[in-house]
Image 1 (tube, rainbow, N blue to C red):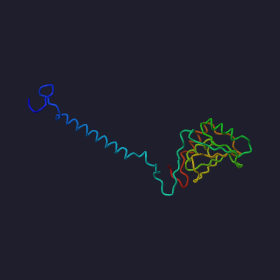
Image 2 (cartoon, rainbow, N blue to C red; image 1 turned 135 degrees about the vertical axis):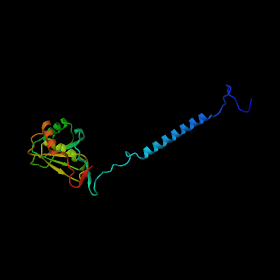
Image 3 (cartoon, helix red, strand yellow; image 1 turned 135 degrees about the horizontal axis):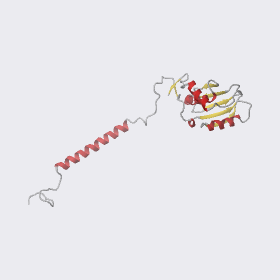
Image 4 (cartoon, helix red, strand yellow; image 1 turned 30 degrees about the vertical axis):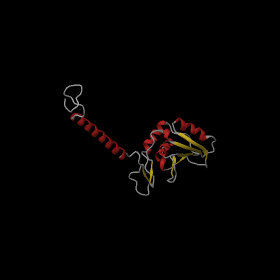
Amino acid sequence: MGTRAASGRDGEYEGMTFARVRALIFVAVLFITAGVVVIMAIGKDTQTRPIQANGCSPGLIPAKVLMPSERGSVTINLFNGTQRSELAEQIKYDFDNRGFNVNLMEDAEPFDKVAKITFGPEAVGAGWLVSAYFLVNEADMVFDIERPGPEVDVVLGAEFKQLATTTEVNQSIAAIGNPEPPDGTCAA
């Protein structure tokens, strides 16, 4: 016997062979490469960074101009600007049946037209969608650049009769087209 330790079989020696060393080096390189890829992916992840408005010139406020695809994402504050008692409650029921959320119902100063719709930069698209329920150009649209939040205020006026039917709403949406960013804003 020599100085080498023999295993149970003739001709095999215990210890690291060149093939085992090569396999371990290959596995170590794979682990290092995987670690580098994970670190790079985390470093370049844009989901954790704040959203910035693209294309907005300095001084313009980003506005949400897309009409919501789901009516349930639109919250309406409903005001009765008529002498008809409980009109807001009746129309709340109509808006609820159409899938909107009605948050607030109150009486308002008398309003002599059909309706007034007030919204801020976060509700431009929502305001346009709500206006389709009053037919084309029947509701006065009031944009308030300083108004916070995504809610839309609707004041029902003395000339208000009823909300538009589904067909009339679809025709109104087609007629009014896509909302444009109001003055002082840019599309977010």
